[in-house]
Image (cartoon, rainbow, N blue to C red; front, side):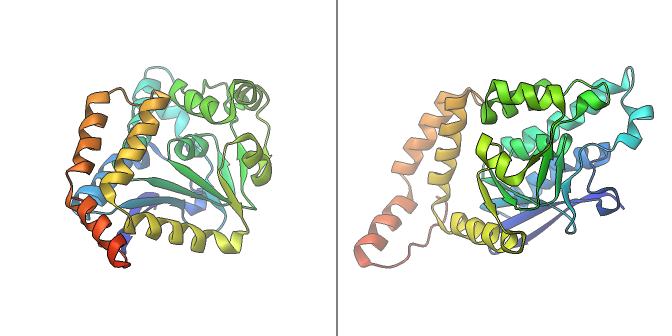
Length: 257
């Protein structure tokens, strides 16, 4: 059954796009499940980093489930469908903790939209990327176009959208669509290690860094919130702990306060 599933270990939450029979294509119910899943990971389980991945070994996400389109995306249904997509992307992008995409196999259309709304993208060397709405007659949602263009530049974004061209993992890295490429056998271990490393660092510092970058890029527009978070870092127990640990030559134990 198609679903969004979550699990937690060592301060790291994993959000799984779980529809392997359809190469992890996203149904509208799956999009609707993403915001409460992110909230549960952060608010209920207190995770400090989230990893997004596809179930199985064949695909990160083949996009939105086209089989639903005749009854859910035509005419007036299109607005509701896009609303569900946007809410899912916004939940990932606005998460107070970093969101890492672990991408293997197919990452197409809506799968690319999910990936570009994560903070960092790691790809296995078998990953393949494409943005093919022109093959269907769809308009790729403007929010996803904007994120894509910010990563790869306007010319490359237009080329990908105009031609529905496929990029392999190394080509995707060359244009900035992904940040790190490794052998498929190494992907899970690398992303797990990176996520654990983030989870051990000072949560307020990491949150301030994420908000500062997103504010600089125009994804967020609350400089007051950013200033308050920076001040909170200077007033935090974590800063005192970090200084003490440095002077005592030990690993700090950050509590996020």
